[in-house]
Image 1 (cartoon, rainbow, N blue to C red):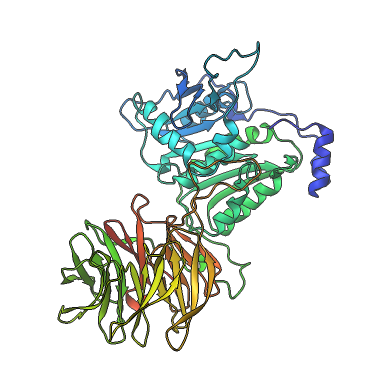
Image 2: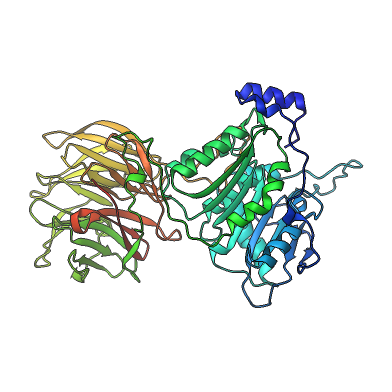
Length: 592
C-alpha cells in the first residue's frame, strides 16, 4: 500500500472516528540500538539465489535470498524465519535491517541460531511473443499470493521453496523453531500460513497487517473466536494513522484481531501507537523487541477471556478442558467408522477393512472383538441390540452384544448411517439415493420419509427423540426434522450451517468473500446431554448449540486422514470419540 499524504491521513482518521492524536507528526525515525551494526559480534551472510519459477503460482518468477548466521554449523538444525517482501527486510540500511538485528540478537542469545529466507512476491512472465513497452514493469502477483486465504501460499513454501533451502542447510523440523513475518499484505500472508499449517509454523510477526476485505481476510477475527486454539505465538503491531479505505480500516481490523486472539487465550502481543501511517516506521522501530518477545523461551498456558460471554452461551471455550487433548484409543486399523456408546459409556466401533466390530471398556480401556462384520453406522436400540449399516450388502443388521448373534433386519436398502428411536424405529441415510428411510426394527417394514438432501450422511436424534438431524455431505447444512408420534417427519429446515473449507482452486476476487468449497463433507454426528450437536466435517468437528448456533470447530487429530464420525462415551459420557482414518481418538470435554 502507498504512504498516505497528510490530507488523506486526516480524512481517514475523521472517517474512522479515531482520536485526533492520529494527526500528530510521528517521531523522527531512529534505528533501535539492536539494529546498529556492531563489530564485536559475528556477522552472517546474505546469499542471493537464482530466480525462482513457481509451479504452484504458475507463470511467475521471484527473487529471493538466504541469510545464514555466522554461528550456523553444517548438519546442526537451525531455526527458520521466512520474510515476505523480502527485499525490504534484508536491506542493512532500511527500516528492518534483518541481517544486522539477527547478528546482534543471535550473538546475545536473545534468539536461536536462525536462517532467514527473504522472498519477493511473484512477477508474471511476459506472454510468449509479447514486446513489453520500454520501462514497463512485470505485473505483480503479490495481492493474490498474500491476501488470499487458504493454504496455497503455505504449500508454495513447504513444497517448493523450503525443500530447496534444505538441500544446502539443515532446518529444524520443530514448528516451535519456525517463524514467519510480513507487513501489510505480507502480514496477513504470514498469519494465514501459520493458521493453515501450525505443524510447520508456530510463530507469527505481523505489522500493519491487511486483515481487511481485500480478498476476504476480514473474516479472521470471527474464525479465531469459533475455532479451537491453535498453538501459535502471534505478534501484531499497528497505529491509528494506518489506512482506512474501500477495503476497510486497518487500525480497526488489527484491533479486532488482537481482541479475538486475547479472547481465545492465545500467546499474543499487540503494540499500538498514535499517528504514523501505513509504513514500516513503527514496526521497524519495534522489530528487535518483537523478535525477542517472539523467540522467548517460556511456555504459554492458554487462559481464555470469557468475561464477556452471556450466561446461556455454549461457546467452545466453555467446553475445552485445560491440558486435555486428543488421545489414541485404537490405531493401526484398516478404516475406522461407526462409533457408538452404550448406557454405561463403553465404546463400540468398526474397523471396516478388518472387518470387525469392537468394544472398548469404559472401566479399563480393554478392547475386545464382538463380531467379524463391517458396518458404517452403529447404534443401540431400546431392546439392547446393536443395529448396523451394511451398504455393501444392501441391508441393516442387528448384533447381540452378549452372544454376537447377527440377524438381518431389512434388505434392499443402501444404508450409510443410522439413528434408532426409543420406540424402535431405525432412520437411515441412503446417501447415494439422496433419501432418508425409516425401518421398523421388529417387522422390517421400510418407508422413505424424506428426499432431496444432496448427500444425506450423518444422522442423530435429540435426547428427547423429538428432533432428527441429518448432515449434508455435499452441501453446507445440517437439516432438522420434527419426529411425530407416528414416526413420520415434517418441519424440514436447514437449521445448522456448517463452516466450509476454502476452495484452493477458487478465484480470490477483490473486496469479496473468499471462495469456499461447495461441500462441507458433513459426516457422522452425535448429541451430548446438554443438547449440543457434534458434526464431523472436512474442517474438523463442528459444534452447534441446541438452537442451531455455531459454537466452534475442533481440529482433526490427524489432518491428513478423513474424519468420518463421532460419539460421546466413556465415564459420564464426557469423552468425545472420533474415527479419523486408521485411528480412533478421544478427548475430554465439558458437556454439561
